[in-house]
Image (cartoon, rainbow, N blue to C red; front, side, top):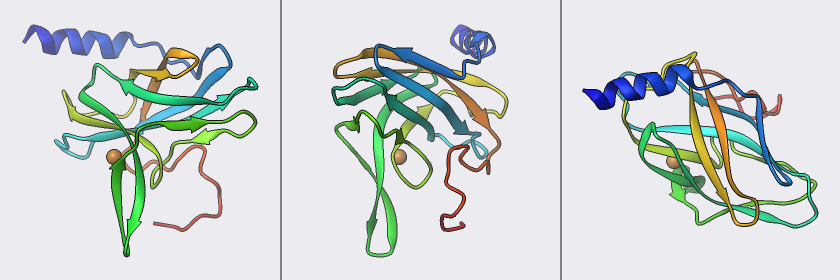
Length: 156
Ligand SMILES: [Cu+2]
């Protein structure tokens, strides 16, 4: 019960920040889709910029909204897209790394409550060189398109 209240306060107080920066690493456009019904898993997407000269790696992520957080990618197995955990996500200078639906994502497992459109929640990203960066993830509608998605992709 107490836990549930603390969680609600955490969600409502989370400031909405468009970007977060630590050293040369900048996190932009952090977003997630609202949960469908009582879905226990979700995903967060974001864009990582490396404004420095040395390559960096996203090693892990954590969030109070999920029991477990993993870094995932989608790969094609035959004609079926499957999610697989990845050890790290490269963040190279000069070209942004985009986590988006159908590709790399921050997997939120065992959500403590459904994600609701309009809320935001914190995700702490740990980088090999830059250390920890906390980003606020804005929850969009269930079928929201990726804010950073290219205009000509395959439709769904
Ligand atoms: Cu996943």
